[in-house]
Image 1 (cartoon, rainbow, N blue to C red):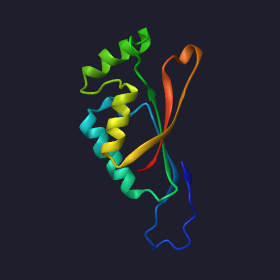
Image 2 (tube, rainbow, N blue to C red; image 1 turned 30 degrees about the vertical axis):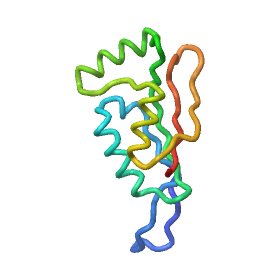
Image 3 (tube, one colour; image 1 turned 60 degrees about the horizontal axis):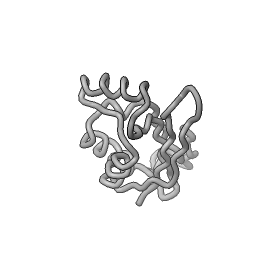
Image 4 (cartoon, helix red, strand yellow; image 1 turned 120 degrees about the vertical axis):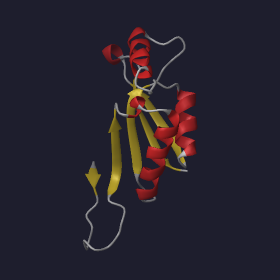
Length: 117
């Protein structure tokens, strides 16, 4: 995380310019992910960004993402499509401004850049 310098410790100011969440949100349901992102959005400044690094499931999914999806379902989570990410992020009062997808061995691993809506 890139932290902003806060002039005085007693002032309540947003603390981060960039929030980075890597391979964590697929552990949770859409409702819980929206709740997590809503809380995070409340802490963001107007110029803050959230970077979410997760697989984005395609149709049909690649083998690695499909396997991971089955694993996550056992714990109440799931791999999400781009449309699902759009919905979850919008419910949190955010919007996606850019998605970068890895090439090669990482398959569907993507970085989703979000800002306040």
